[in-house]
Length: 193
Image 1 (cartoon, rainbow, N blue to C red):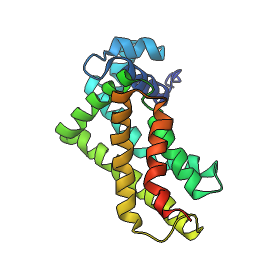
Image 2: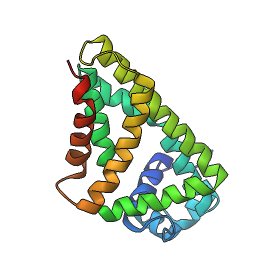
Image 3: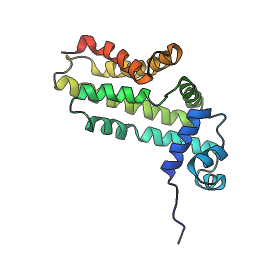
């Protein structure tokens, strides 16, 4: 009978994300992730095979968790429009500092240049856009928004969220969450009932 895992893969991947926030993917080491997660580097190698394997597992888990994230946000809000605003605001909180955002953008460089990572990034963005559209459709049905082209608006919201977060990191005015949410409120203002 095998030994029971003391630290779950999910906990290891959460620790990996924290290390990326702190130092970026290029400077991430298995030793740093092992220390952050409370397991040995050898255990990391057994589970993930390499640093690349660990980063791919993180990318795959992130892509697979998008719908769960939106479902969790939706359950907390009766209003689909409030859920949409909350989801975009929480997205912004993933990079609490300009340095953390820079480190996550370094991971995006890998997503854009490596086909294995790009596959997961594509799954992630498509799922996010679909979830935005679903919330927009619900907001239209609930008469919170005027009828509109929700597929195009969902893509615009996805673009706004990322672009606004970069603007916040440069301007450094207030919290990222509030900055991005205010930009989204401005985009949606002409469509609100």
